[in-house]
Image (cartoon, rainbow, N blue to C red; front, side, top):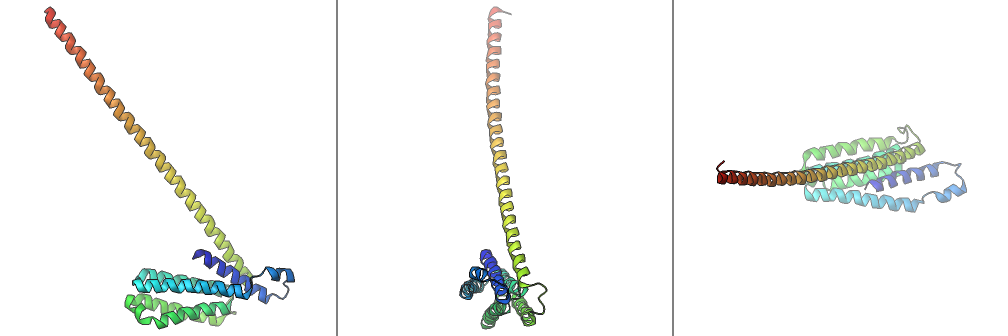
Length: 215
């Protein structure tokens, strides 16, 4: 899902820039994602987002439903930041439509989630309605920001994986050393016990000899 978010926001923001930039060359136009390709990505992404919400509703999982709605909100906000009115509106209409159609089921799961969803939709409606006047950055800047954020997230994931691997390695080495130390301890204890038995046997034998000699 995170991968789709990056593809959707970067691709659509870039497409938006290409459509509004009259100075784009013929060669760069050939490298720009087509409208049909962008629409296909949007449709797939919307289907997955709605499926996640529907799954949460079916499972009656309030926390998961809230999280899925927030993910949908984040997707729309990214498009708002990119100044892409048409696609932001499409996402918003899809979210509104689902919540209106399934209002009773959502409220049955959690009135708090239902109220939060309603507030989310109201806020996004206003933001989309105000485009492009409320867009502080150009679509190109927004696309670059999203791409950079994606790179940062990827780097964070790599660092986290490396840290986890190092921690696991350290833990494994510590456990291995502890196991070796424990075996050494057991071996030393066994040797000490054998030595003690040998000493006791020698001392007993010596005592027996002394007794026989009357010493």
